[in-house]
Every structure is written in structure tokens, then in C-alpha cells.
Image 1 (cartoon, rainbow, N blue to C red):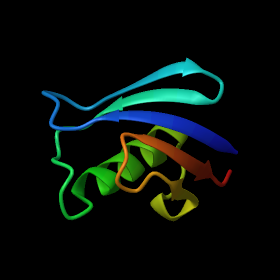
Image 2 (image 1 turned 45 degrees about the vertical axis):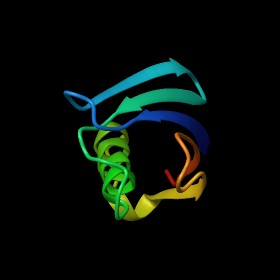
Image 3 (image 1 turned 120 degrees about the vertical axis):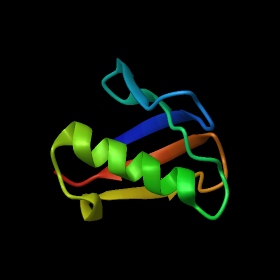
Length: 73
């Protein structure tokens, strides 16, 4: 399943909001440096979907606030 994620980094708290079936808004406290924010996004999505982190892959948007993510369920 592919989802689109709009990310806000350096937020005050972690948050995941489902906008619709394929779109989510995520806030993470990590800064967008050395892939810290991307790892936090993967952790948050894995926890939300109840899957392992290896089942979550960022397909595109590694350095963009809008990312395409593949969730292997």
C-alpha cells in the first residue's frame, strides 16, 4: 500500500493525523539532518500500522516534506 505523507520536523511533539485513506500528516521532534527525521517517520508509521520498521520504505521525497511511502502489510 502506498501513502503520501506531509511532514513537519522540529515539532513540539510526535503526531500522526490521517487525512484520508492515502494521505497522512506527521509531526516529529527530530531535525531534518542526517536522516534523523526520516527514521522517526518510519518508527511512527510502523507503530501506527502495527508492523516492523523493515516493512516501511520511503519511496520518494527523502529530503522533501512531502514523501511517498510504501507500507508492506
